[in-house]
Image (cartoon, rainbow, N blue to C red):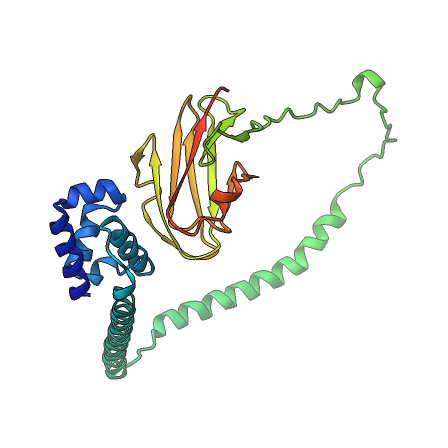
Length: 293
């Protein structure tokens, strides 16, 4: 990976671009571009599946052929993955060893301690048990005589009162607040932008994405990157939720690494994307803008 990074850096310098200029051109952060040029795969350990995409896209931006680098990149990624796996196994074995040492130490301490019987507590329990038995015998003989000595109460006829129609309780149906019915339509001449209508001001709404495969995601609010939710890689069957308070012209942008087969809903209602956008297997931004209540 060091050789690939050196090739990318050399090409960038030949073209006279800075890392900041290439970041604006590729939409890849300066930190990520620097890690690629330094061959630092450790930087991408949480987004390892997107290293190949980043390198290929960076090559395109530098007018550099990606094919000669493909095999070397695959080899470097496999080697790094194997190293990470061995490291995880070693850490797990070391953790297990430490746990066993602590258990053995605790067991040895318990064996040295002698269990002592608290005879005073046993005596107290025995006395309480005898007292309960005596009390039960006394109550068993005394209580029935109390009931026999009590005079019978006079019985009175029971009159049932039927409520008149005016007295009948009336059920008042609960009035439930109905959620806003949102509609989503594609903006004119822009298949990547969708206008959301039917919302209420200060009412929260939720955009949910269910992922069909591993994909990197970044969320922007009014064109500014946000950490709620944070930029990361989601896996198949994961669900990402974006909950906001509705306001006029609020713009939520989802930057997908892969769009294809993902499911998007707003307040539980499915969003149908333009066919070309929905089939994208590379980086794509999808915009949702709140228009008119």
